[in-house]
Image 1: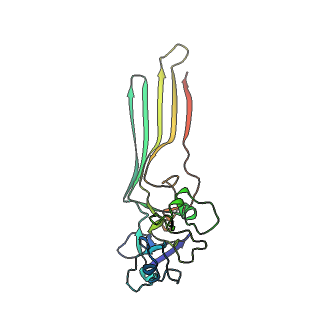
Image 2 (image 1 turned 135 degrees about the vertical axis):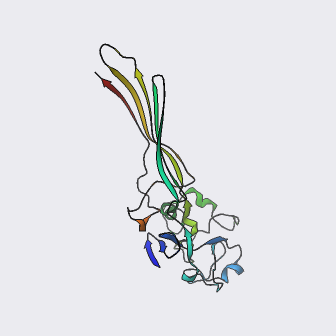
Image 3 (image 1 turned 60 degrees about the horizontal axis):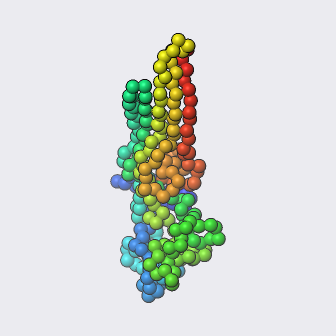
Length: 237
């Protein structure tokens, strides 16, 4: 097995599995009682508490450690690519380029930083649904400065579906009638990154940490692809 650690995430490359699969803990909700929680020693070596993440104890020894880690995701898509299509009607012409990626997952490092609730740093609005005595059905674990029990360790909590379909580029053009002053004039507008369809919660599911197969699927918060528009005139004399 080859283990690669980067930005709090762990990858594993092993025989019979995908290259550099995400490797960490599976979660099973949140502890609802102290009796249940204190029976489990968390990944930081101390008993868990009510409102903490309930990690899957794979070997049943009531200790969450390296022996409980497993493959929790795959950054490799099983299908990806692009296609271009076009159409024309009278003097109008339309061209579009689509890109897609299907089946790949991502480690949302940005959400890890902004939803951990273990520092004074600004957090996402979603943390308002963290567990507390007044919100016992909260979807997120309790607020815990310094994270003594290990709620923020690398787990499937931070893994998301990053499949997407994009209209990468779309161009509309109109050709004016010919004239004795010119042989052709076309007016056009090109939009880049016009539309992205994805369940991914980050800014942009199309990203890379490094151009290396051992560092795929990490959304480190680099500048996302921006939407832009270009309007122009093509003149043929």
